[in-house]
Structure formats: structure tokens, C-alpha cells
Amino acid sequence: MTASSPRANDLPDYAPVPEAAFGPALNEQGYFVGRVERNLFWVTDGTYQSAFLATVDGVVLFDAPPTIGHNLRRAVDEVAATEGIGNTVTHLVYSHHHADHAGAANLFGDDIVRIGHVESRRLLLRDNDATRPAPEVTFEDSYTLEVGGERVELAYHGPNHSPDNIYIHFPDHDTLMLIDVVNSGWVPIYNLNLSEDVPGYIGAPDRAMDYPWSHFIGGHLGRLGTRDDLVLHQQYIADIVDSSYAALASIDPTPYFIKYGANVWAGVGGYLDAVTAEAAAPVIAKYTGVLGAADVPAFTTSTTFSILQSIRLDLGTGSQVHP
Image (cartoon, rainbow, N blue to C red; front, side, top):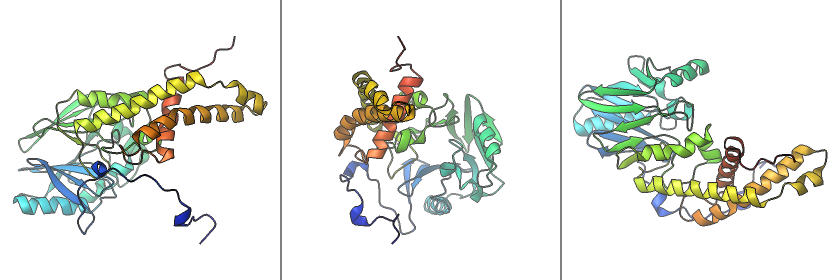
């Protein structure tokens, strides 16, 4: 046991995860595959999610998370055997370029059609990762994918979690897939799910709700989402926004800069830490037992910090003007 390896008894305890946050049990190989509607299926390992559309002309895969990895092939084979259809993956759609959702894309060979946003192609060419071949078919605003008599609408509405994250709508399957924005039943992890554009991230669920759908594939955790899950997520984020405005208005930065004098970064750090803690505390208290991991301080606190900085830097609120 090294000094840097804490004992289990030294680690913090957290509130039980709400039952509503859990999904179906995994099989002995560590995955679950289930029907969303008709020939649209989803796959999870309890942490990541993928989906596929089984058509008469081949299987269309949506994202290939490496944590699911070869279990994607097993899930497709399982459904093909049960449904009495072919198991050849002919198309792969990238929701965005991040490796945690696309890092198993190379498992399906070179003979498939890869589709993604133009920015996904640019970023994947930049990253030069053999596990994520760049899409050959790209679009800027929207693209209708038609395979085997089935239709999927792909759309780009600006940056949110990433510069290239798209909306994947299955109009004939009553389903929307939007990755890394809403974790159904859970809070976002660090910094709004490690999102790069805070205003875009905050606005993305509103855009998602404009679509007609009943089933939501969010890319993470162990169950499908519902419209109620997006509403709850929106309330959580709105509470952070409101609490952040209140904390910015109530906490005076002056004592921190007086205390630390020439060490101005210490003054900045003390002030921003105080504002963040003040804003996060009531949100943590409100959603503990409602959303999974709401009481893991780093998650809500870091998300609050990101929103605070967006309020200050993107929206211009809370910046002190020298008299």
C-alpha cells in the first residue's frame, strides 16, 4: 500500500443512488442489448451507450464506444440471430469525434460507410487516431440517411458538448440520440460532462425538446431516457445558473485581494472558490437522492464553476468595473 493509495475506509461515503437511475442488468459478457422500437436497438455496458438500426440492407451503427468494444459485435450478432436478419454492419455514424464514443470504430473494418459532421472529419484527421477513421460522408447542417427503407435525420445546431456534436433523430422510431449532454437519472460529471461550449451545452436540451420523441439515447449510464429526464436536467442546470447569479451578487471580492496583496492569483482563486462553493451548496442539497451522484462534490461544484465562468466571460455578468 503506497502513500498515494487510500484505504477504502478513508474514502468518502455518498448517498445511495436513486433506484430510478439504474438500468437493466448486464449479461455475463458485460453488456445489455434491448429494443428501443421496432428495429432500433441500444447497447450499454452500464457506463456507455451505443445504438444500431437493423435493416434489410445491413446494420447501421451509431457510435462505437471502446468500453463496449467487441460487445458491440456480440450485441449485433445476438439481435440478428433472434430476429432472423443479417448481421453485416454497413454504416457507422459518429455523434462526435471524441475517442470515448468512437474509439472502437476500427473494429468493423474498412468496407463500411462512415458518416459525420464536417467538423468531425477535420478533427479526426487532426487527431490521426487509427481507431477512429475519419468519415467519408459528411454534412454541414443536415443529412438524411436512408438504408433498407429506414430513415434517420442527422442535424448540426452549433457547438455544445463539442464543436461537432450532432442530433440524431429517428422519426419512425420515436427516438432522439444526443450524446454527452443529459445523463438520464444522473448529474453531469466534471465541467458539464467536460463540455467545451457552455452556452451551447445549456441550450442543447431546449433544442432536443423541439424534436418529437419519447425515447432518449444520451450516451452514458445504464438506461434510456425520457422527456421527463431532460426536464429534470434542465431544472438542475437552471438552479445552478440562478444560484450562480445570486452568489456573484452577494460575495465581495475585496477581502481576498486585501488578504493576498501582491499574490493576485491567490486573490482570484480565493474569490472564485468562495463564489463557486456558495452557488453549488444549495444545488447539491436539493438534488441529493434525486439525481445519481448529485452529492459527489466535484461534479456539481466543477459544473457550477464552468457555468459561473460562462456567466462572467460569455454573458459579462459579475465583472467589476474600476471606478
